[in-house]
Amino acid sequence: MTQDRDDTVGLRVAQVSHAYGRVSVLNGVSLQVNAGEIHCLLGPSGSGKTTLLRLIAGLEKLSTGTINIFGRMAGNGQTHVPPEERSIGFVFQDYALFPHLTVQRNVEFGMKRQAESREDLLELLGRVGMQDFAQAMPHTLSGGQQQRVALARALARQPRVMLLDEPFSGLDARLRDEIRSSTVKLLRKAGVATVMVTHDPVEAMAVADRISVIHDGRIEQSGEPEELYLRPVNHRVATSLGEVNLVESVVQQGVVHTPLGSVPAPRFQEGDKVAILFRPECLNVTQQPEEDSTPVKLRDVRFLGDRTRVEVETECGVILFATVPLQQAPGLAAEVHLAMMATPAVVERNDNPSSKHAS
Image 1 (cartoon, one colour):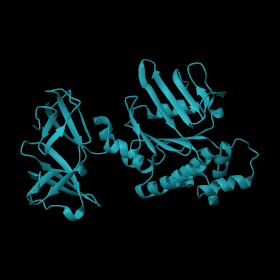
Image 2 (spheres, one colour; image 1 turned 180 degrees about the vertical axis):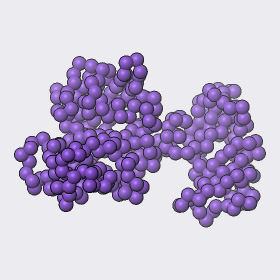
Image 3 (tube, one colour; image 1 turned 60 degrees about the horizontal axis):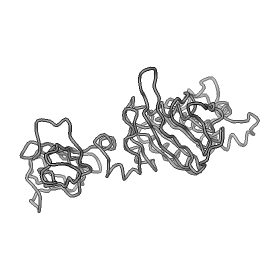
Image 4 (cartoon, helix red, strand yellow; image 1 turned 180 degrees about the horizontal axis):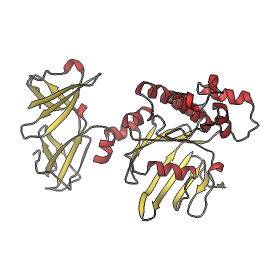
């Protein structure tokens, strides 16, 4: 790969666009990942996540934008460094192990030099907890074991960048948490710049140092998990990270009025139609009236294990959801009051309002 000026960032993707024929898949995507950092691409199916991974890996030729790996140009409109020269490991969603090769032979396939010692290979298998399965065939392994072998094969190339395409989606919940945690620790310890694709917000927030929310081929927002969860730039980012309440209203004298009080809207003009978005945990549900609370109708109470989800309806017919600790969960027959405990996540222009407003 040819030398570029900036070698301080593990992976730099700048203004990448891509299309299949006339169908645009990516539009001006930019992101960067440092060594030892886990960067999650979060978005629904068809948003362009896997296409971006394939471009980074060199499996597709880039037509617009640039991709740099530790300061070296990997691809632009004129240059295309082949995948085997990019120092990249790739773990596919279905693991893509060779079914006719043993675990040992699968991992050896990933090694840069076939003359690597058996001790090196067993040490690598030991790092992923598969040293006792060197002669096993892939079909005899569980999903979690196959994932570990796929990771070992990718690490065998001693990559500087690792790409993970929903690698844990096929595992059951308990095993997924265990394998995911061990994988992330291994990648961070190795100092590998990692991009992981997922559509699961809980997974993204659990493992990522930074998250990029992607919709329709565009990065809506990039930042640390807490920033995106608490300060999303729009409705799409907010809903990508979890459930949100939406209240529609109209700006009046710099504020918007909701069933739970007024919210400042300094960036909007008088009469603008807006949507106020806030998380369920921003609401306080009580069985006794408190300061700034309003009576609401209790519609549903759902046990979620470590908390309870409460659905209520305001006097003007707006449906809201709150999450409360188990010990504060009201009975279905209870009279309840609702108050906002924290500033709403975001106020945004509402170009397609429903017929029912909250004001």
